[in-house]
Length: 292
Image (cartoon, rainbow, N blue to C red; front, side):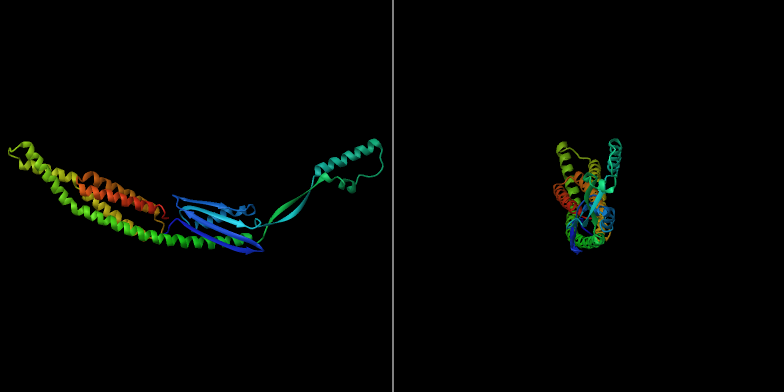
C-alpha cells in the first residue's frame, strides 16, 4: 500500500552544467501531472509525463527540471533582409540611369548598408542534457516511490488499529442489543399497565407489540454487513495494488450502516457507541484520502 504524498530529488553535472530534477506528490482523486521545464527542453514534456505515470497511478504530481543556463549554449546568427537588399539594388540602378552615373552596383556597395544585416543569438541544446534529465527523473521517482511506500506502511498500521477500535465498539453494540430490546419491552409493558390503571392486560396483544418493536429495532443485518465491510477493508489494506478508491467506497457503506443502527436502536448506550463509531470512521476517512 502506498501513500500519495512523497518527494524525490536528484542532481548531476553535465558538461559543466548542473542539471536537477525534483518530484513531489500530494493526494488527489485522479492522476494529475504538472511538468515544469526550461524552454529548450519543452519537447520532453510528454515523455516525462509517461515516465511519471509508470510510477504514480493517483495523486497530483509536480515534476520540476532545472538546468543551470537553461541546458543550452548559444550561436550567433547573421540574417540578411533580402527583400530590402533587392530594393536597394533596384533603386541604385534606376538612380544611375537617371543621372548617368559611372560605376557599378556590386556586392561591395550593398555591403555598406548596415540596416540590411541583423545579428542574434540562437539557443542550442546541449546534446547530453535530455538523456541526463531522463535518468535523473527515474532516480527521483524511485526516491518518491520509497517515501510513498514508507508512508503507506505507517498509514496501514494506523488504519488497522482504528479498524480494531471500530470492531470493539461493534462488539459492544452487539452485546447491548438483547438488553436494549428487553429494556424497550419493559418500558412498553409499564406504559400499557399505567394507561390501563389496573385493568386486565391482554398479554397476547402486549407480546405482539413487543415483537413488532423488536423487529423495528433489529440491527442484525446492519451489523452483519458492517462486519463484511470491515473484513474487506482489512483485506484491501494488505493489497499491493492501488486501493484508495475501494477503501473510500467501503467507508461510505460503513457510514450508512452505522447511521441506520443509530436510527433503529432506541438505546442510550448504543447511541453513544454510534457517535464514537462515526467519529472513528471520519478519522479513518481522513487517512484514506492519502492512500493511492
